[in-house]
Length: 318
Length: 166
Image (tube, rainbow over all chains, first blue to last red; front, side, top):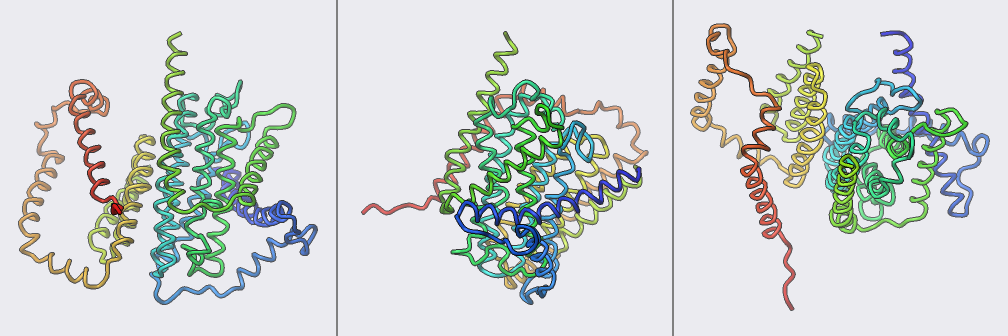
């Protein structure tokens, strides 16, 4: 292993964590803008150092493990959440080359696998806290994330069929003429909704719905362990935005500007869209969320798979 | 590579032993997840990365989460583990244990060099399995899927929350 590869391995998680921390500030400022108020604007230029101040504050808070909790699992849960999100970034092609881990020929499946394992963070946090609210939050999270993983996988099938590969590099290469958002608009819609549910973000943040569950699965967490859940959630938003960019918006492709800039622009736009959804939409009821998934998104994604398959077959036979 | 494979294999075995010796059900499930992950690592080393990803997505990512979900719903406590201890008396596991030991010995004999004469059989690949499942036995596969669907519908019907007629 060369030293540059080692440096990449060390620097990438640090950079991603810094980005996710910065995102907490960006989100609060944008929410302020859209809700006609200021948001944090005191620390540093435009309030930029608010994220740093929050980080320092959270590090100095007492890191308390409740005596009734299952100690080992309680500590493990936030680490699982953080790890699975950070590992997923290894296969995303940010520029013309391949991802950090090279061109994995099962790249998309790897990300789905990591998302599947990410469920454990929330579920185990809920179970090990040994309290009602956390348990309810954990159970909601398990049902919600398992369900939406199904639609997420199915909605991606259209993209995989059109590109003929699970490799993210090949998927970007297949979008040379036309971005997949146009032929796969149905899959794009399903994937976007599933992505929000998968990162349990507002408006689909039922596992931590504060008006009925306290803080849901992380009710008993404090200090940096809570901070890790928080940062993992923001890293998850960046991940889903990167995925949307790679799978539907042509990845690093674009005229004039260098590839990395295009990738950053598209991902940044998606992140801003996520925050706009949070600012604009109320939270649905839990049964509404599940009904939407199984009664609307599942048939839609199956329809998408069927239509894509039919068109591809017809085109091949012509 | 060889040392890495041995490491993953030993994690698999130790994880499997931990699964059946843990008292807390969630801990056992977690060890099972570790076992499955180590198995996936082995598959990657053998070059079967697609099978490894399916293993993680389906077994570790979906089925095991459902296990945890059910355990959380049941909320097992002290009386349950006492009752389970009651069930696991020697006379309960002695018979199955002896039979399992016989099959295990047979398997060990088969993979040992003493049984060289038995190795002339042609191996059945995934390709062969796929061909016979979707070729010769396609009707059986469809019937089995009907049965599964019927089971699903029946379970939903029985578990449905009925609204009383006014």
